[in-house]
Image (cartoon, rainbow, N blue to C red):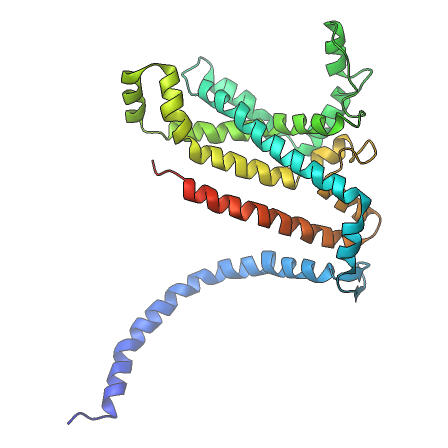
Amino acid sequence: MTNKNTLPTSRKKKTQPATISRMYSYWFYLPAAIVFGVFFLIPTGLAFYFSLTRWTLFDATFIGLENYEYFFRDPQLLTALRNTFIYAILTSGSKVIISLPLALLLTSGLRLQSFFRSVIFFPVLISAVAVGITFSSLMQPSDGLINLALESIGLPQPDWLGDPDLALYSVIMIDIWKGIGIATLIFIAGITSIPTEYFDAASLEGGAWVKFRHVILPLSRNATFTVILLSFIGGLRTFEIVWTTTRGGPGFASDVLTSVIYKQYQAGFYGLSVAGNVVLFILIMSLVYPLMRFFNRMELEL
């Protein structure tokens, strides 16, 4: 007859090392979990809390959802929201359209290819603030270098940053110029990762158009998704170039969500501006997460 008291003890002795071994591996997650909690979860939780308060940096009074009510009643908000979407869509779409041909050119065995790659990537290395200040000087209506060049060939000289109908699109052009390098680099990485067998097979079927249409375009899909996603997120949260060129003006013509939030910070409405940041966070998450899930489903295995 089996001894009922000794059987569980022997099982414990056998299962204990396996349990300890399984638990041991989880300890390696602990440093990452602490960093994530301290630098991401706690600040996010605090932001949600302060968005529900009247906050003066030294004192916070809980006021419920009043900040959100004020934020959504702000007359600048609708303009800023519309501009933010225009900004994100135009910058992400333009970067794809311009970067793909550039990447094709820079992977075609062109002479001085490395030099041209460096030239295109150079704007990425410059601070967005420096880019904004430089272009605000270049785009001056009377003595800016761009208008002087247009004048010399007899073309009209628009007020790039002072015209309410043009200011937002001028800022978008600056953003595209600055971001085109990183988008081209992603496309170059995508094109060079395509196995050479596909190019060899396409060469038998036709010339450069067949390679582009049936090999490069479909097999660069992952790179295209990456460029769209990164540019779209960057467009939704853009701030430095807008602020250093137009400060959201003239009037509210080039205001985006982040510039509206910053103006509230400047006015001392800290709780209100944190509520704006929470709205921006929720907006980005609600748009980008489904987009990312869709792109992940459509990705190709090369």
